[in-house]
Image 1 (cartoon, helix red, strand yellow):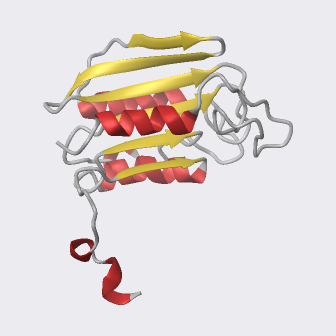
Image 2 (spheres, rainbow, N blue to C red):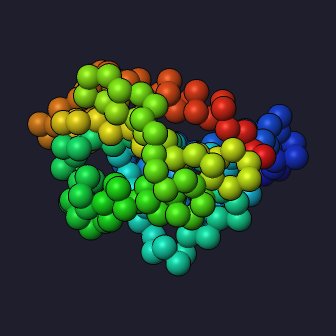
Length: 175
């Protein structure tokens, strides 16, 4: 592979490098926001929380975050400590709100059926925001996919995660 993949030799818009992922990919997206905010413009974890201690999450700038998660996820449980020990989804989001210096109160930006998205704004100086989309009753699933990875988990088709995360990324290039 060699030099082919060096950033300077590829046609990459370095202002539009993002990370999204499901479950373990969500954990990784959170970590990349913590340790590589100079590379990743925004993150969009799905069904994965931050898995490193707060003191190890020191982004150089406010990182836009859109997180989607089902309240009935048995693998990465909403309240924490599912199959893999972890903090809660609200705790993970509050960490980003605090780290990014966002407004303390959220605003509901979307509500339909089982899905409610709320946003914390005024994060940092560059228009970053933290968004949490809560899918009531959904299990360990990618929102919008009728099949779930977890055994006997319940999907949701209200929101297409691929579309909403892509729209969020489009709105948040690197400052």
